[in-house]
Image: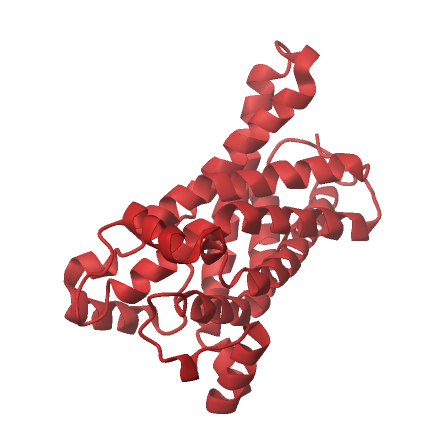
Length: 291
């Protein structure tokens, strides 16, 4: 990756974050609904992800699938901007330092892993509050058991109520878990992405050079999608994960522990593929080299 204005890499990441929300938020809404209502003591409300999706569309329309998206657009766009920007800049710096100033396209774990983990650790401070607000907005849609007097009018209202009731630390509940998850998860994601991308380019670039743009898009879809699947486990935990699992298991059994797994896995491929393809296209438009 050649030298370029740092702000461009952050801008490319922000655009990728918007694409992630557009594609992935409906899946996330279904997942959160399943986790909320299928683990409550009164029993299962939705049979599966498709049943949940149909119910949301029937009662709220398409906008119901995007409930809570405002905080996601802000949070994920900002998070993605930081993640991709920090990853790109750190990777470039480590790569040049370790190779004595010689740029190389060959993936190196000692460069990819610390760069991705560092980016993941930083974005955890953005993700923790934005995910909390998003989840609380998502579960109060039509059919929610919450009385209207306890519903939030928007993300800002949700944030103010949370801080009023729990203090500022309330919106950062589960911060350590989020930090560990994002550090490890992004190290896995970018490792899979970089290696799949590199070897697909080696195998296909020479034979399909006449359609390089379509080839790059196809490789971006596959590498980003596979990277997402590799890090598909749920992102909504806001407390000690072992206590949460124990509580859910006592209320809803083993089935409850896996509530929302389907939409989480299904979301992983298209959402992360969209992020990578959009990121790579944005970098090309901004003149950032990424061979």
